[in-house]
Image (tube, rainbow, N blue to C red; front, side, top):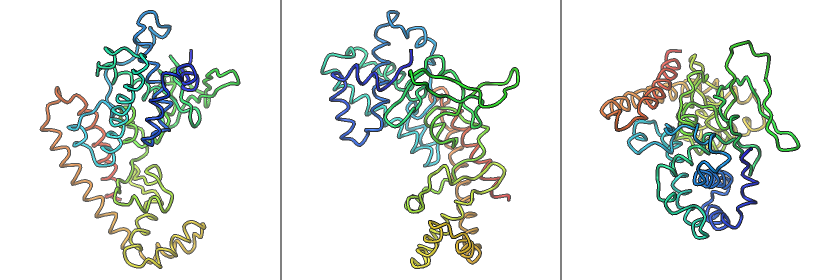
Length: 336
C-alpha cells in the first residue's frame, strides 16, 4: 500500500494538528507532508511484526550518509554550499524531533520510541530519501517502488492514475540487462544529492560553480544552483558568465547594471552580448580567481579530512569522493 502524506494527515489529524501548527509558525509548512510520513513510519515501527509494512521496513538500510546523518565534523570537510545543504537536512530532522513532542501530548508515539535517537534518525532518513513529491503539499512512498536507484537520464518514469495507483513506465526502449533507474526529485547537482540522499552521482554532467557570494545576484536574475554549473568537460554554463558580469557592473556602475538587467530579463541578446564583449576580460579574470581559490579551499578540506579517523567518522569516504568530483570539474574549467 502506498504511503500518502495526504491520507495520513486526514487519518491522524487529531494527533498532528499541534505539531503542524508549530511547523507552520517556523516557516516549514512545505515540510508538513514529510513530517506526516515521518510519524507514520514511527507508528508502523512500533507495531513491529503486526504492521503490514513490517517486511518492507525490515528491508531498508540502517546506515545513511546524507546530511541528517552527518556530524559537524563532516560539515567542516565540505565546501560552504554542500555543508549548508547538509546542515539544512540535519536541522530539519532536529525540528521534526522537537515537533514530535506535540504529537506525544495526545499519547501517540511511545515515549521510549521518542527518546531513541537512532530510531528517530532512521525514520527521518527513510522518509527523506525514499519519498517523492507528487505535487505541492503531497508526498508519497511507494514500497518496493522506492528501490529504484537514481540516474539523471532516467530509464523509468513514474505517474499516478485516477485511483491513486503508482505506475512506472519505461522512458524509452531498454536493452536487456540494462539498469532501471528513476530521476530523484530535487536538483541533480552532486552536492544536493549528497546532502539529501547520501551518495555521489559520478555521472552528473557538472557541479554548482560554488559562487556563494552572489546570492543577491542569483535572486535578482532568478537563478539557482541548478543553472550555475561548471561542467566536467570544462565548459561553463552561460548563466555563470551572466551573473558574474551582473555582479561586476553592480560594483562599478549601478546604471550599467540596470541596463544589463533590462537586457537579460527582456531577452535582448544583442545588448547583453555587447556587454559581455566589452567586459569579457574582467568576467574571465573573476572566474579564474574564483576557480583558483576554490581549488585551494578543496585541498585544505582534503588535508583536514585526512586528519580524521574514518572509523569515528564513517561518512568521510563519500565526502572525499564528492570533493574529488568537484575538484576535477574545477580543474577542467581552469584548464580550458
